[in-house]
Structures are given as structure tokens and as C-alpha cells.
Length: 570
Image (cartoon, rainbow, N blue to C red; front, side, top):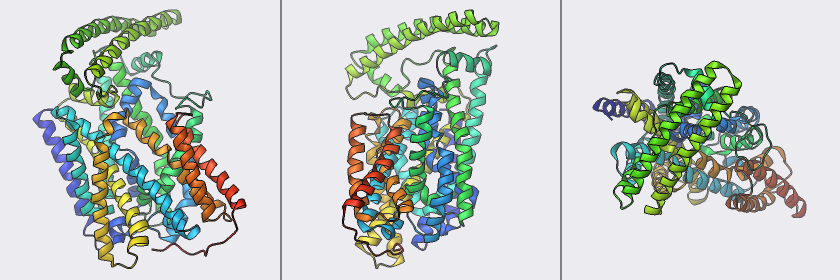
């Protein structure tokens, strides 16, 4: 990056952190630190909810996902609006009425302490691991720019987020997210315009989409019902509904965001805003990835996008073999470029036979390039067994740093940093609130002072920050970050959601039945996930439904002893 880009990047990050700390004021008690005094308006809530979900993974990995696999990932979000409606009707008014800090407080009053603790524990495991992945995403950026190991950049990013989350608490998170999302929307829109502007003369937006479609990248909707296909309209509507309902309804990183709303109405409006905007936003981010794919049909892409891995093999004994493959790749690309231009001409001619012939020829040329690329990846792994063979996380970053104008590169890199900081800060805040409210305050030290709980919240934030940094150091081994974080969530969200569904709608079922059902369900889901029995989105629906069925069975089998019902402890 140029000096201008570094100035833009540094200034943007500094202003965001300073703004959040200034707006948050001082935190005198746990309610201010964790809930921001429950005083935020609906647009604050909505943008905070979106920023928590739209991490750096979204802006770094989603374009790469579309580049390699097309638009079909957008189906993942089709269940989101339905989930928002259910949340607004059921979850939001209950949580606000009880004035809980965490979603899991409600479970003790409804069931018992062990069910509350188990559900909180499942959340802590899931969110702790996922947050490590979100920290790793911007570390890739610094690593690529500075050409240093991601270990050092991970430590820097994690430390920065821990600082302003510990100092500012929930208000700092929410206020920084408001400014972050404004910058993010502007920057990504500008990036999309510039991608189209970089296409060759005579090749416009429509040409790019049609050409990408002929190579299978405009596969927005898949109507086939295939349980082993990760992204279809059915997995999105059904599996995605259960995942989004569990994520927004039971994951404290999201519940904590809309509990900061000043009223039930403000929280509901914030969630509806998220439900209406999220799918178009994700569609446009994926579309940018498709446009980048179209751009690289006319401009030679790197043989491998992760330059850190490329530099390693170029310094090894396999350098000659890799350089030979790179030469072959360049020759194959020139052939593919000719076929791409032929397809564009055929599209302009509107002759279907000519279009089909050009499409088939381009697919053959594309396959030759893919074979050479796979040979290069195999060579990298031969050189180093720990080499990361998945470079989709580096596609958009490579395009940004190599082809966008000075200043804008710094802004877009800052956008990815901001997204990571926002989602990571929300996660750390939620991990701290769950640890302190559901474990420390309820079980370990129930009669301490407000100052004690405030200090415990800050210490818990630091602890979970260090845990997440540790997870981030291993994140390079898990492939595409966007898929990994959702796959990890699918192992636990179904079980957690099932507990809440029973709590809300099946009033006769008590704590022992739900507790046993949750343990069995989680064991089954982990086995399904480990052996890849079914596409991961379906695990959310299976986990929820299985827990409900098992809880009902155990309710009938176990002695009917009703625990005293009470409001959850604060």
C-alpha cells in the first residue's frame, strides 16, 4: 500500500476507536457496561445487529466465496426475515419484560440452574471459537500487506479490540458499529462501481454478469431438494431459519445488541431493519465477488492468491517446478482470454448456437487452468504439509491492493478491519456478560458489589479476548472463513434453540427432561457433523426438533416433580 493508503487506514481506525470511547462515557455499573443503560434507538439497534453479524469474514471471504462458487451462498439468508418475525413476536417482549442481562437468565426461572448453566456453556464454547475466526480475518490483510506471519498480526488486532471493548463496554461497541456500517456501505458500493470500470472497453456490467453466468457463477437459486447440497432454497428457508432464529434469539452476542434498545418497539424495529436489509446487502457483496471473477477473465489472476504461501515455495527447492507451472498457467490464461472474448462477441450476436459453442470452449479452457492450479497447490503441500491450500479468503484482498486507486485501498482495508472490530467487540461483550451474569454472579459470588461485577466484566472481557486470540492462531487450517464460522455455529445452535422453544411454548416440560435431551441431542449433532452425514445447515433444524422430541419423551418417562417457578435472579 502507498503512504496515502496507510494514512487513510490509520486515521479511520483511530477516529473509530476514539469516537466509540468518547460516546460511551464512563461505566459506573454492570448495566452501563453490558447493556448501555438500555437507551439506544432502533437504528442504533439495527445497525449494531447487522455489524455484529457482518464481520470481516463477510467482506473478506464472501467475494472469494462468490468468485469460486457463485452466488448460491445468498440462499443461506433466505430464512432470516421469517426468523426476525418470530423474534419480534416472542423473544423480544419476554426478554425486555424480565429485564435480563443475558438470554440464559430466563432459563433458570423456566427450568432450573443446571439447564441455564449448560446452555450458557454451549454458547460460550461456540462464540469463543467463532470469535477467534473473526479475529483471524483482518490478520490475513496485515499479513498480506506486510508479508509477515499471521501470528503477529493476529496478536495486534486482538489486542486493539480488547482495549476499546474493556474501556468502553456495550455503548462503545454500539456507537462504533453505527459509524462502521455507514463507512462500510459507502466503501463497498464504491468498490462495486470501480470493478465494472476496470473491465475492458466494450465489456459492460451486463456482459460481465452473462459471462459469469455461463461459467456457473450466477446460480442464485437452486430449487432441487438435496440434503447433501449445502446451499439450496430449501436448506436456506428451513435450515437457515432455524440457524438465524437461534443466532438472533439465543446467541448473547445478538441478544445483547437488541436488549440495549430503549423499548420493545425500538428493539423490534431494529430487528425488522436487519431482516429487510441483510439479504440485499449480502447479495451485493457476493455480486462484487462475481464481478471480480469477470474481471479476472480478462486480466491474469495469480496462480495462487495467498502470496505468503507463494513466497514460501519460491524460496524452497520446489521453486523451479512452481515457476514452470506459473508459466503454463500464463499460457493457459491467454487461451482462456481468447475464449472469453469469443463468448462476449457471441452474447452480443444473440445467436444461441454461437453462444453455446463459445461457452463450451471457454469451459474447456477454464478446466485446463484449474488443473494447473491444482498441481501448484499439491506442490505447495508437498513442500509444507501445513500449507493453506484454500486461497478464497485472499481473492478480494488481492484485487483491492493491486487494482484500486490510492486512498481507496486504505479505505477498503479499513472497512474490513472495522467489520472485524465491530463483530469481535460484540462477541467479547457477550462472552463477558454470560460469564459474569450466568456463572460468576449467579454461582460463584452472588452477593458482591456493583463495582466488583463491573471489574469482573472487564477481566472476563480480557480473558475471552486472549482465548479468542489463541483460537485465531489456529484458524488458518479451516478453509473459507465464511463457511467455517457458520458450520461451527450449526453444531450448537440447534440444541440451544430447542431449549428456548421448549421454554417458550411447551410449558409443562420441566428442567430435568430438557437437560437430558440437550446432552443427548448435542452428542448426536456432533456425530452427524463429524461424519458429514448431511449438509451443515440442516443440523440446526435437526438439533432443534430432536431436542423437542426427546424432551417430550423424557417428560413422560421421568417423575413429574415441578420445581418452584420464579423470576430469574439478577
